[in-house]
Length: 491
Picture 1 (spheres, rainbow, N blue to C red):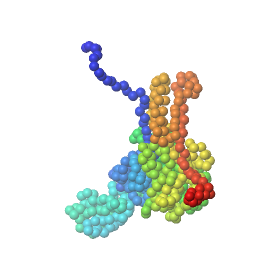
Picture 2: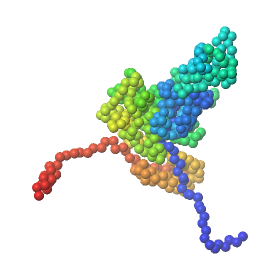
Picture 3: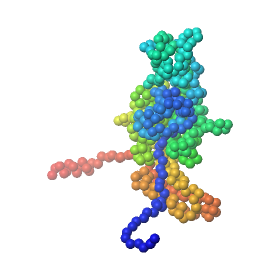
Picture 4: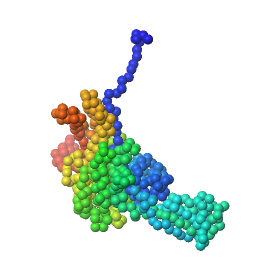
């Protein structure tokens, strides 16, 4: 074939720069308990991470109940899907329907209009049986003689099939087993690794989220459990390195029960005594109310932070403080209403690194400091929005350039990282998410011995925006302005 060229033509060359891979800067990962008896498959819900993109999927996967105290994951379901309308959310349930159950119970019920209603919640339908009330009872068959189903409030209705063997009975005995959330302990939430079964439970499963779903859990929380100091500290330990790659933040609660952080004046002492003091920790106080519901602030604050990041292209550069928190009140564990004014919120809570809320033309989230404040005033540790944007940038660096691990250490590799990442940083600067940033490959930091040993080092400098936490305007009376006005008026 001839290679003679005459005319016009084009060709394409692959992009030399790395395409940025970004994570959601505030993706929630919630550990707790769920009413799994209401799930599509109750026995496939325990100690495994789920990613839900809407409430319907969450209900099908783990069940839903308004009993937020016993079923703590439902606090985050409500705050995430109903209050803020954001997604996705990662959830790990530790309530085991084969372990956390009450002993079987048998009761006799009257049949009314061909139906029995059992008011109890937590019933496992596969463990429910219906018999006659005779000394030698007849055991009836489900679907053939009766149909058991859940009502919207979690109770159970049993419809007697008109052509079945139980038709016409005035009384029937029902035997069933129930979930018992009180059997779940904070050790179940913390979890462990069983050497014999090779299985992980509780928080140990956080590291499975990215390999399984390809999403980075960047906000860890356990509403209803994180007010237990051991749980809060375990969450912080997990946040240091998720899936051996990423860093995360932890949103926790302080215990507002009697004798603990039950008043604003006691918050600092309780926080200090229980080691709520890490840069990756965001403590919230007290509980929040949304209409008739009362639940832990961490569920509301984490959903609020995901909502803010979602409305900023997934970039968590904005402070959650002084933004609508969508609550109707604040409460302690015993139901006592708390109504802090701005000075109290500042002096008792913000000053010791605790986020709260104040009612100024509607309830606003109030507080910019992580738990490390006031022990550290370094901006990279202190400010919530700088901690979150730095973690976001670091995690995205790892996501984007992980593919370059084990490549040849040559100029092309170095240029790809430097050029590609500077483009990402320039983009964040252009959107005002950071003040500026630059990545460099410094030869002084990369001696030949280290390079030959397979180790290269880049250096990134980033400038972030601190929140305008204190805006001051000095007013003064200027008599010369008054004089000028009077003299001008006499002409």
